[in-house]
Amino acid sequence: MRPMSDMELRARLAAGDLGALADAYDRHAPYVYGVAVTVTGSRAHAEEITQSVFAALWEEPLTYDPALGSLRGWLVGRALHESALRTQVG
Image (cartoon, rainbow, N blue to C red; front, side, top):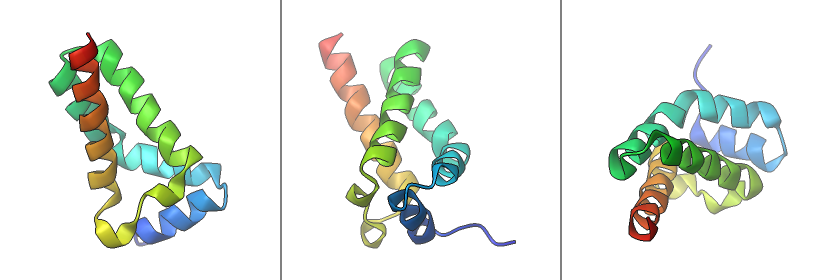
């Protein structure tokens, strides 16, 4: 069985398939969390950021455009942005 493409995963998310969110989380959460913990230096903040990034994916899956890059890159980019904001705020 071949891995699902980012385009297929996005389509499933847009259709409200909760299993697609689980698939995306299983595949990409370690990268999102790793970036967040590296930037913030806090496991607690990294957990919150990871949750926030995947909630955003679930709530607005069409904000991710596979034509512009990988889902992992989009998720990690959001994590970097949220992590940077978290370190500025404290």
